[in-house]
Image 1 (cartoon, rainbow over the protein chains, first blue to last red):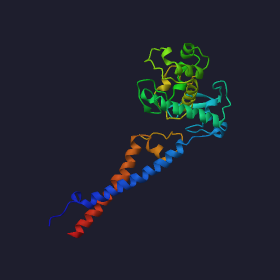
Image 2: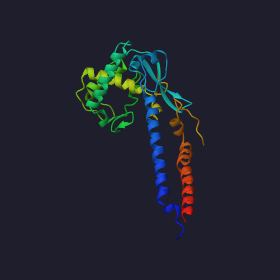
Image 3: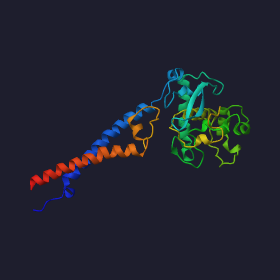
Length: 217
Length: 50
C-alpha cells in the first residue's frame, strides 16, 4: 500500500478543527467576562471619588462633561469635570437620575431614534451620530441652537428642539415631529448627556475635529 | 511595528487589539503551531501503521 498523505488524512483535520474550535470557545467565554467587567456602570461614589469608569453612573448628569484630546491614547476622551446644573439642578439623586435615563432610553426606543441616528455604533447615518451629541458645540453657548430655540442652556435647547424639531429648520435634513412630550424630552437629553460621558475609545472618529469640540469649555 | 499599549484598562484583549502584528502573532501561535505539532504526530502514526 502506498504511503498515505497526512493532508488527506481525516484524523489530522479532525484534531485541528477540535483544537481551534475548543480554543476559540474558551477565548470567547473569557472575552465575555472581560467585557462585562469593563462595561459595568459606575455609581455615585465613583463620581464623587474621581474613579474613572468607562461607563459612569447615572448621576454624571450633575457634572460638566468636556471632550479632550488624550495625547497618549491618540484620540479624544470625555472628561468629567465639576458640578453643572442640569435642568436647574445639580443634585439629582442616583434613583432620580437612573429613572430619568431609563425614561430617555425607553423614549429613544419608542421613537426609534436609530432609524436615522447612530447611538454607540448602532443605527443609521441618515441623521447625525448622537453618541457624542451632548458635546456638539452647536448646542453650546457659542453654537446656533440655543439662539434658534430661544433657550439659555444646552439641555433646554435640546429638549425644546426634540419637542418641535420641525419648527427649527437647519441646513441639515429636517427631523420630523415625533410627538415627544416635555418629560420624554428631558429623559432623552439626560440619556444623551450620559451617553456622551461614556469612554468609547474615540468613537465616532474625528468627532473632536469639529470646530471647538476639543477642549471646548 | 508594536504599538504602545494605551487602553484605559489593561486587558489581554486590549493588547490583542493594538495593531495587526499582535493579532497575527497570536493567531499563528495558537492555530498554526499546534497544527504543525498535530501534523507530525499524525505523520508518525501513519508511518507506524504501514
